[in-house]
Length: 223
Ligand code: TZP
Ligand code: MG
Image (cartoon, rainbow, N blue to C red; front, side, top):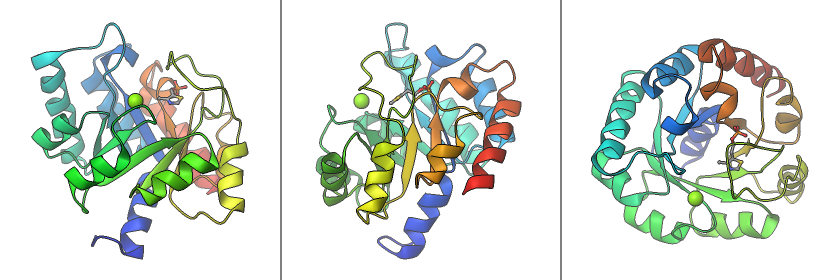
């Protein structure tokens, strides 16, 4: 879809309904297997987030990214890179996601150009407004619930920030993140999110396809 159009925004919005964020550290089986099953279960977007003490580095980090990107390409699932502009440029990824402590969103947007997807984590209305001004395509808002997947996670915020964003009239695509699973996803969507982003609910599931499918069912029901 063409840049800056309502069509492009809605295309991104639709891709956010079930967003899998993952690296090798989060998986109980090979990341390739997890991703394939998650896609079979209905995920709509993927973020390569290879973080933590046990994370792959160097050539292995790049090679896993390539293999996961290939799987995404085959199934027409957008492939987003967490916090690594250079990797995204090298692989011609579909976009980059940055947190508040990462490179500024303005810089990411400038370097990626207008056609790539730029996602930004926001924990308040102020951070959300700044991200929008910087050229973000979507916001990741959380942690909605307690999470075990991020060591330096911010305090839990429930669905409050998502509601606040919508009440103040912001229409940017939003995904809730943090501790979300099939049992607690509904309030996130009802609060105004366009989807949910999950790590452990899918990546650490015994049956990732089943887990994704159940989550998707809940989300679609409340969207
Ligand atoms: N950002 C805020 S919470 C979180 C990130 C990356 C971790 C989400 O993982 P999980 O397992 O879905 O709680
Ligand atoms: Mg970060």
